Length: 187
Image (cartoon, rainbow, N blue to C red; front, side):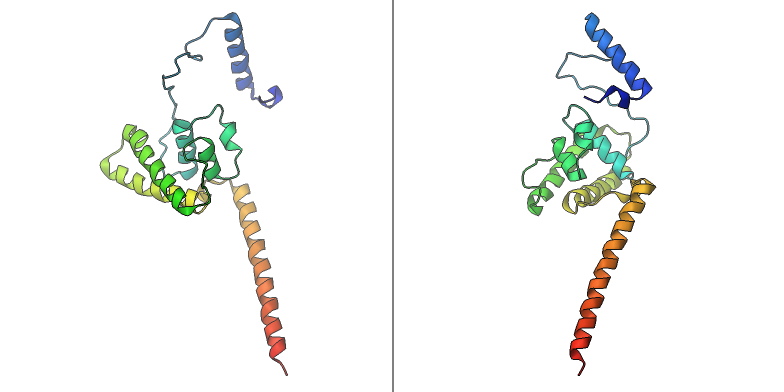
């Protein structure tokens, strides 16, 4: 449960309203459903496509995933683990490239059947989306890549600075090794 002080004003009002509805025993059909087999609508305020990798992956997790709250998968360390937490890919053999390749293909097939099939797009656009989606899934699942285009500037700067430090450290090690070789070769 999220502490009340961390909720926005609107979330707090919605929480209070829903608790009142549940306490009074009067279920409001806009907010509460008892039909377990009924798929609830997912509001999408703009076109979500593989051209916006982070938004698209989040949309896929929300639309196809199995979870109680978004916090369950948003707190994972990688997108691969998020997809696993949502039961979109199995959690077994995540380090085995051949298994993960199969998971990527299975997830792509599911996205084509359940997401792209309901989007109002042309066949040409569908072809582009499938290719981009395949590349995105492979990069996220096989290479643990982060869709860097959608990172906030502060996080991107921090990542790039860490990478720069790693490169500088590697350069120092190689330079020291080269100097050792040169000194050993001197008479």
